[in-house]
Length: 135
Image (cartoon, rainbow, N blue to C red; front, side):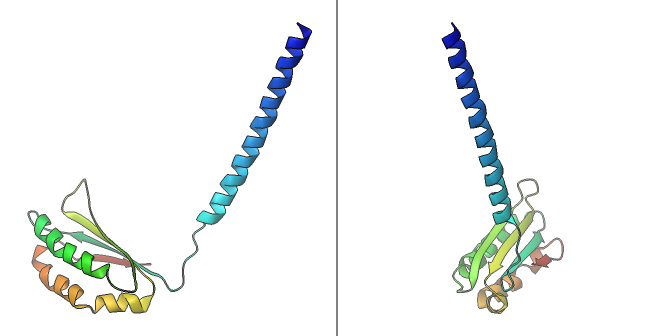
């Protein structure tokens, strides 16, 4: 009986040590993850968030015009990503999330024919002015 009790105590101690080591490993991993997730602004990178509110009934027409812009912009050399999102809660509300490698890439986009065509096509679709933020 003593041997069984001693054996169970030994297993319990191993479990406690293992838990402590796991806890320390988790703390270390959390610290490493936090260090990696620290936001460090990239000096040259340009990020744009453009909020769009379209008139009721203009959602499909807007998506059609915007899809051409998205497809063409993704082909630009300096474009990192270019996405259009429609709110699941308000179908008239959209955002463009855009990333460019630098100001030159953004300026190329802003002066592109596909951007100019998009800008010319949407004014009658809009319920409000575009809300454009740069980061």
